[in-house]
Image 1 (cartoon, rainbow, N blue to C red):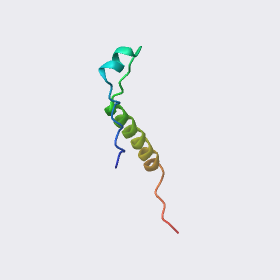
Image 2: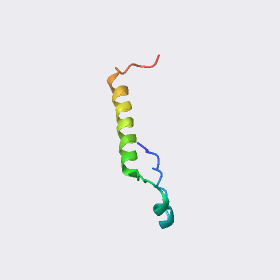
Image 3: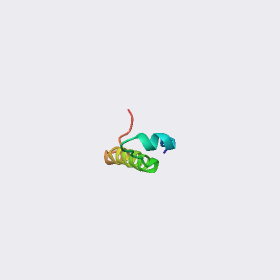
Image 4: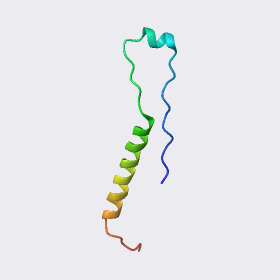
Length: 55
């Protein structure tokens, strides 16, 4: 299983931190975890179907 590399958070300068009203930082590991759960859900769906032979 191969997961995409998460985007790293944006870099902020002290000046931009001072002038912005609010800042949110996203956790890159949360993106990896979300993608992993989506992939495992897809695998679960595939594995729930019966295996049939190709004609």
